[in-house]
Each structure stands twice: as structure tokens, then as C-alpha cells.
Image 1: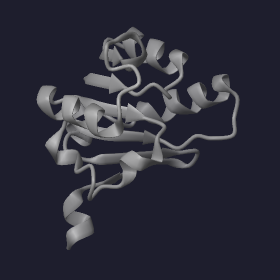
Image 2: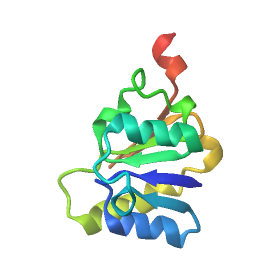
Image 3: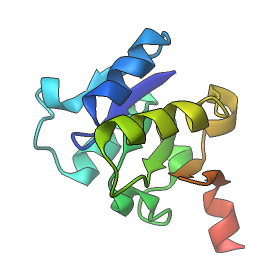
Image 4: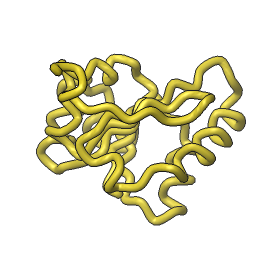
Length: 123
């Protein structure tokens, strides 16, 4: 998968994804460091990237339709140490593949992953 990782994504999660063979752009290490949500979204649209973030704003599916980019994964694993968050992320990420995430919003919580599309909101 081609992923753009927002600045709030923990480094161990990014390292895990890279070790699994995914192409991950770490925003902290690019000229996009400090970019707005809209700038990140536009980059994802332009390059058909999957946005990986812990920012709940990206779950606003009407504002950030996931079908315009490669998809969006919002990691809602809060209030835990980084190691525990990373452990849960690894377990749940295994249930996702590029075909499942393309054009969809994936919300990852302690319980698992929910997938949504913009059509579900407008219907």
C-alpha cells in the first residue's frame, strides 16, 4: 500500500508498516511537516495515497471523502502507551488490505475496524 502517515502517527507504527513492505511517507520527514489537514488530503488525492492518521477530523467523511484519495484510516486508539497502541494497531491492520481500504474510511478502535463509504452517509 502507498500510505501517507500524518504527524500524529507513532513512529513504531510507521516502522511496522515499512517492515511489512508498505510504501509509507512520514509527513514529519517531508516538506509537508506542519501541513493542514486540507493540504495532506490534497496530496493524498494527487498521488492516490491512503491517509493514516490519529486525527478524528479525517473521519468527517463529507469533508474528506475517502473515494477521492486512496482511502483513509483513522486510528482511534487513545489513552494507552505507545507500545500498547502499536500492538493493537498491528493486530487490526492485518484485517485490512488495499482492496478493502481503497475508497473507504476505516475507523480503527480497540474493538476492531469499521469500514464506511461516503455513499452510506448520503443515502
